[in-house]
Image (tube, rainbow, N blue to C red; front, side, top):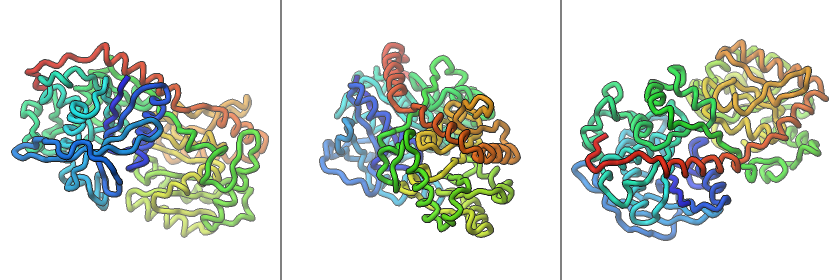
Length: 488
């Protein structure tokens, strides 16, 4: 099968979050199963390209025309890459934002990207199915139902649309329809209209042949008001075409047995290297190696409410009074960056913070920490808890979304389980889970068993890729008819 991925980001070329990891790993896994896979990305600043396959596409944008080029990137791991090259739209310091603020023309930028992706499917690389990701590509199925509904070359292409995070909608003023050359009939409650604005995510949810999200639990959660972010009714409307397929972990990149970023490789058969990794991590954060027997909690995250930092800010001082180390890596809301730095300053010798993105350090934290903290308000899937399990780093998580699907609560009397969970979104519940983990840590035998339980889990992409392949086949057989006069 020929599968065309359309995504606003993807490693190794661009990244702001876990979406980029998925768009690297899933196509690679599908290619390994024998499928023909290509990925379409914007050409952001810093992406080096060699061959231009289409010097100039003609893309109508309201009263104007734009002429992006299509560049052919490298073939990596059996996956071909194409780039939409429009420097005025994509050659910028950030992918979606600058200094924390969205680019004001994001609606136009990703409308052009979606139209260009369809043109690639017409002119350059003809797929059997298109797989789109998040609001930035949600217009692809909408366009196939409207602007391209009469185009015999693409009108029968099924679209699978994956929502990686329901919290990000892509909402814009009504004028976007005219500026982007979209039918005015789309401004309707049955289409893109959402409280007086244009909502691109809503359009994708309504127009896609199949909707997926990144864990079974999250597929259920987004049908509820608590997690649906105002679109739960739309998802319930499409419930018969919603699937939850768990993201996988790329163990070729994230495994202590082969990780070149860590000071000492190790495995479930010999964990001695993990102790060396812990001392290396303590040195990196200028924490006392002489106290290496003290439990070390790691965090690699965006410092935002969604990731539970409002909870952490309520109980952080109390948690730091426990006998532990804490190291944190990430970026996010300035108030949380300031809070973590202040907390580290107040507890010198016990806590270290690094504000920024550092892939090497992220690997070292996974390997060197004893525990990994993810107290998310909601978490569609999460990858770090899967990485942590592989590294023998015990996760402490809130029981939501993919965290609940992948972490099994430890049972002291049976020795079963892989980590610690708390259900209520409350600082005291978080603190209780941390204290429970600290209590088990003091029992070396129980802790070793807990580590080995996690390291035995297999969350590789193989099973998930096979499930996606089956869904593509289903989408081919059950695609939604598109009439030439379709308007929404």
